[in-house]
Amino acid sequence: MSALSLLRRSLSTLAATLLLGGAALADSSPLVTTDWLEKNLSDPKVRIVEVSVEPGLYERGHIPGAQNVVWHTDLVDTVTRDIASPEKFQALARKLGIDKDTTVILYGDSNNWFAAWGAWVFDIYGLRDNVKLVDGGRKKWELEKRLVATNPVPVKASTFTVAEPNRKLRARLADVVSVVEKKSDARILDIRSPDEFSGKIIAPAGFQELALRAGHIPGSVNVAWARAVNQADGTIKPVEELRKLYAEVGIDGSKPVITTCRIGERSSHTWFILSRLLGYQVANYDGSWTEYGNTVGLPINNPAGTVWGGK
Image 1 (cartoon, rainbow, N blue to C red):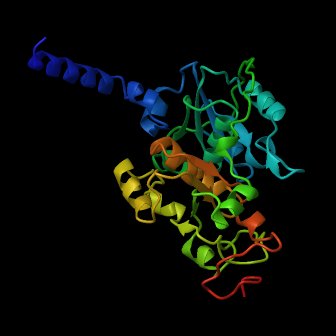
Image 2: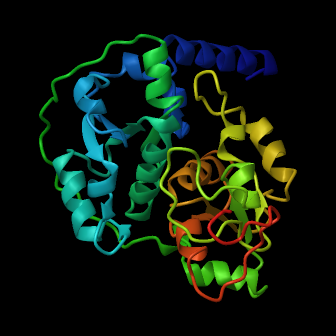
C-alpha cells in the first residue's frame, strides 16, 4: 500500500472517530469530556458514580443515571481511619453493578478531589483501566447547564470479586520516614497551598485543623494541586503543561513519587494526574500531614516560624 493510501486511511479512521463523538478516544484516556458522557448516558456498559462530600448534593440533582457513593462512609473505615476493607469495597462494587468489564465514570464536587480518591481506591482493588474521571467534574457539568436528575436509577447487582490490594499505590508513614531519613530515593510531592506548606496556616479557611504542628515533611517539594487545573471550569491542563509543571520541582518520572496533603483527598487528585495521565510510579499517602505532623519525634520544616498550633 502506498504512503498516500496509508495517509488517506488514517485520516478516514480519525474522521470516523470524531463522528462517533470521541468514544474511541475515551477508551484509551483516563478522562472523559462532558460531551462524551452526555452522548453515552444510556450505554449499559457505562456506570456513572458520583463521589461528592457536600451532604445532600446528589439528592438535589445529579448526572442522569449516576449512582451515589458517600466518601466518608462508603470508601473509608471510620473507626480504623483506613480505606474501605476488601470486603466492604466488594460489597459496594456489587451494589453499584460494577464488574471487571464495566466502564466506570467518576465525578464529584470540590474539583473531583473525592472522585479521584474513589479512582485511587478502585485501582487498589483491581479496577483501573476502565475507571475514568469526568474532566471538570460536577463543576463543569453544572456550568454548561446540562441535564440533571433527582431520582436514583436502580441497577442490577454484579458478581464482582475484589482483587488482592495493590499496596504499591499507597504510602504509609514508614515509607515517608524512609524518604526523610534518606533510605529511599522516592520524591515526596506536597500538593497543599503554599501557606500550608510553609506553615503559615495548618488548614485552608473553613477546614478543620487536624494537626498540632504546621509546616511540611523535610525534603518534600510543593506544587499546589490547583496549578494543574483550569480555574474557570476545573478541567485538567494539557499533558505537556503538566510534565513541565512538575519537572520544575524535580518530579519527572525518573524516581517513585509519594503524593501528600492534609488528609489524602487533594493528593489523590494529583496522584491521578501523575499516575494515570503522565504514567509515573506514584503512591498516595492518605495519612498525610494529619498523621505525619502529629507524630511525636518526627522532624518537620517550618519556614513560617509558627511550628506549634500555627501561631
